[in-house]
Image 1 (cartoon, rainbow, N blue to C red):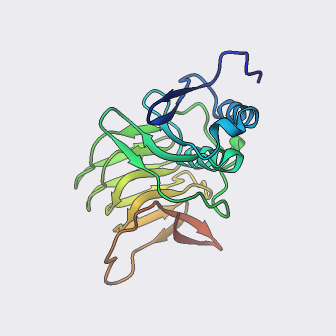
Image 2 (cartoon, one colour):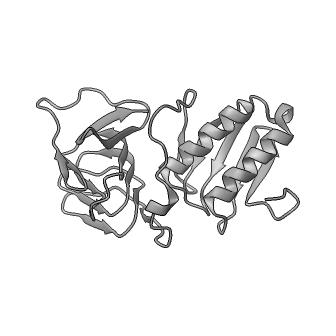
Length: 221
């Protein structure tokens, strides 16, 4: 798109740095294309800047956040340091992006008409959440709680309950959490349970469960 058109994302500047505010109606591909053009035309101006991504009016998938994070860094060494999800919830981003795994799923495989289901609290024992697309939990998933989604399961907290991504058979679906410590996780038709003894420490960055070599593997970003 031309930069003279109404932009799909606003770049706001203040004394603390830059804030990116995506247009609620903008497609993610337009947001990426616009930012690439903007960074190429103003490379020196944005070079090594720190930016905040404001998603309070435009939720993005976690893999879309990662794609934008990587684009900003590769084009102008811009660091995305914070993602705001609501007025009371945000998470910080540490380190540099590592583009070597987890490519975004092709758009043809996504259910573009289905907005993600956003759960704005911790899921406690006995709760069962079912989503026809992605499911985003803004809190922990406690033991005894269950999250089932046709798309990805994304937990901005600790996953200790049960999660099933790709419930309709989508093997490219993933389970994301700040720490994956579940009773059981499932992706499509595959099931995984935690090792005996559990985990002794939680990582500071996202863990992702995905299917690799016909088995569910958990990696740390």
